[in-house]
Image (cartoon, rainbow, N blue to C red; front, top):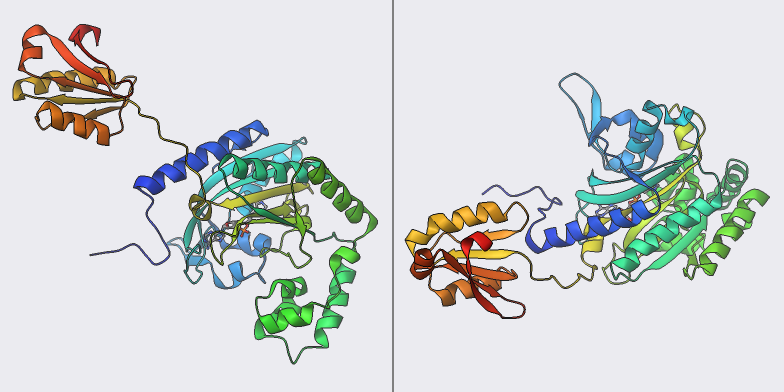
Length: 403
Ligand code: HAM
């Protein structure tokens, strides 16, 4: 038997119900915030992710599904959605059009990670990206939107917040941090030694306990923000407080992708084990320019659908549609004809096997339909159909023409 690849799951049956319910709720909320659907390819030039997510990130450094295609192009399956949306934004020259442009998307992402509970190699994200709005109110709107989606799905969360500063305050902070970490160069892990050379702030979210112990006393970016980043961060915290969105400041939250500046945030759940991040995002004001567009402020986030599916409180599924069955072979043609007509508007479960009434009712109950409609030899003679409403339990025999 051929099985699916490690870390790549099928989505069917009850999971599919959860998956589509999530997409429908998230889509509705994103549209309420003025976002429009965008679809970008699963396969992109590898250079796109190297220039955006960053060569020093684990995602680009270790986890890409990268290959040379038949035309000798260096391509890879997208590990995340932001880079492709930015590429599309620049390619369509929307960076030259001015104004704000807001997009949402959902689809499969691919990262060659070590699979474990909550960590897949093919997973799905729902993401949103907003271009052209430099105001921190947009950052707040993003966080409120993510919070609205989670609340509507009945999912509790903790929101972690940080500011990663800007071109003005980040470089001197990095220098400070490197000076601090260098004092411990013989004690930090191999990964951190590499990070100090490539992207020093990534040392802060190292999972190694010994490193974490050392970095407890490291300088904090939040204490070195320039006045503009600091005042934006104060405004953001105020808006969230005014809108009853609780948050924790996590000065070690640096995110696993290199394109962020200023606001960075993650929503985590305490109910799904160690892979607890259910959504993450932030501001990335320099990325459009990195990808050859006109400088355009931008902010966004993405949610991990598989992680959320475990947590969704599903609404009660209402009985819906019809079950059609025959008690005699001679009634089969008639129920097929009726089903064809009914399916123009309704969901119809059609049973091809003839059964007695009791068994048809049992099957209709299992199919969770609202009506069970059955034709036997008597009904054929009279041109009628027997219908039971499985909600209020009323039974009627009606003319087929009126059904
Ligand atoms: P990210 O934090 O890498 O951000 O991913 C967002 C979410 O995707 C995570 O919080 C998690 O729920 C889910 N996720 C990530 N990796 C896996 C995995 N291996 N298995 C299952 N779920 C996973 C981004 O991707 C950014 N593009 C978000 C963003 C949009 N920033 C700005 N705009």
